Length: 185
Image 1 (cartoon, rainbow, N blue to C red):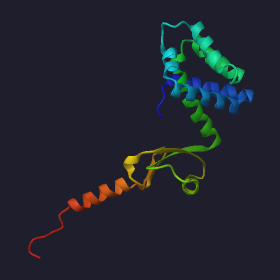
Image 2: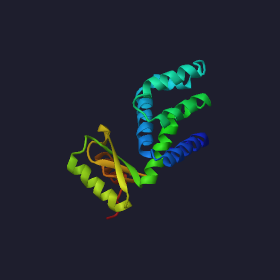
Image 3: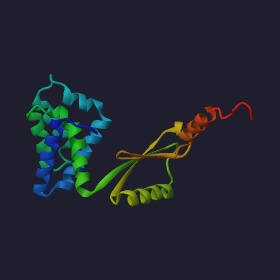
């Protein structure tokens, strides 16, 4: 994902602080929780982005939502973002922080899209192949798309493996559109 300079700077600063304090794993869990809340609750994101709601109310909401389940340093960071009027960047800061954490741990994220959910045996096979290709730990994110008909599509960084039935049908269609008939034979 592409991030703004502000997002990257705050995420990197918080990552450095968490590393210095020795709580980088806790901070990752907290940023993942923040990202999940922002993804699942659009009202929360709208509240963060609303300039009419004053900073004190936003801090109260953040402390009510995250107060008991996050590390105090993470909560202080979120409050600082509100105080500095940067709260609208919190969702993307959380994503950027997760990317920094994964990069520091040597984890790559692979996206697998299939027509139906993959069986555990198939997931293990895909993971094994990707680990051999990258020599990194792989985090597998699974999606379903019935339009694929069958098979799967794997995306890892700028690399794609497309073994879907829909793509194979399109390729066959293109091959049949070519007229291989030559007059005179």
